[in-house]
Structures are given as C-alpha cells and as structure tokens.
Length: 217
Image (cartoon, rainbow, N blue to C red; front, top):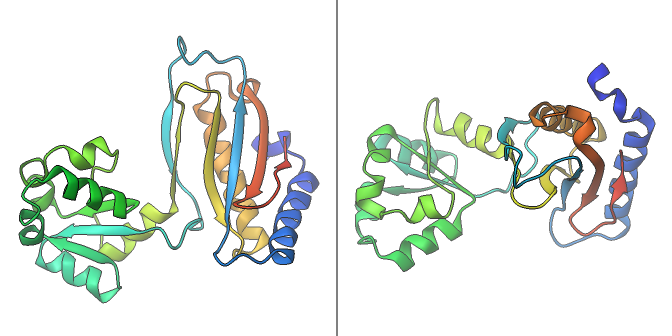
C-alpha cells in the first residue's frame, strides 16, 4: 500500500531473507521471535500524549505464548479440549488472595482470558495482583479457541519514558510473505498512532531474538 512507500520493498525483502538466513546458519534450541524495533523523534514523552494501542496482526507472531483461562465450567472444558491451561473459581479461591501465589500465577502466563461470570469476581478472589502485573483478563467473547488466537495475534505499542519501542511481529518459522505482511501491518498501525505520523519515525529495525538487527527505515 502507498502508506508503506516510506519503506523500500527490496530493503524489507532483503532484511527478512537476511534474518531467516541468519537463524538457519545458527540454529537455536528454541524458535526465535522476530522483533520490530522503533526509534522515535520530535516527541517529548514528558509533554506529548503517551500513546498506547493494540492491533491484531494477520498471522500469530508468538504461537507458544502461554494463555490461561479463568473460566466457568463450559470455558474450562473448551480450554482443556485445545490443551490451553485453565483455572476454575474453586481453584482461584484456594489461592486465598495470597499475594505471592497471585504474583506467581501472573508470572506464569503471558495473558489471561476469563468468563464474564468470573471476571466480576476477580478483585474479590485474587485482589489487585493481576491488574498490578498489567495482566487483567480479557473477557471471553467468542470461543476459547478464537479468543486465544486473537490474544496471540495481538501486539501492543505503548510509549513509556524512552523514545524506543520493540514489539514481536513474527517468528522464524513463518513464511517470508507472512513476516512481511505482519511487519507492514504493524508499522502502518504504529504510524497511525503517532502525532506527526512518519515525521515522528527516526528509525525502524527488525531482528530475530539472537540475530543482528537490519535497518528497514
């Protein structure tokens, strides 16, 4: 799309094949994630609005991301059927709002999904622990499977105090076309969040977990 004309197609293609090549020469014992690193300019995190936005990518960047369902009977059964871990209300009660145990629960998973009936009870069952960890559950809106996939496909851009951000946009087992689609999608979304769009973008790099960075803008 013309929005992406700021990134030369061949630069992006070369970066992607370079990353894939690099990960093949040095095979790791785990699946490497592909990260998009963003440098911003003409932005003052003190004064300017600190943006935050979540976008669902076309392809899941981190298939192994651990999601836990805090569910009613039906949702816990759905989770079990697709080998997604879950906790029932009874199991959550057993944690007795113990800060250490709630902290451990939060630490063990990347994200949580919860049934409507359970979400209302979270503060009473667990206290503020999940919220503090930035992992308050997302309500289950469709099926557990669809919602787990939606969470795994979503990435969040959040400006904190520094002018650099990094997000997962893929992994080395995806096809080059899929990686490209995700990168384009992520960059377009990020640019739409910025006050001056491309004028706020200083640099864009992509790299695998252990590989070297490739500059694409």
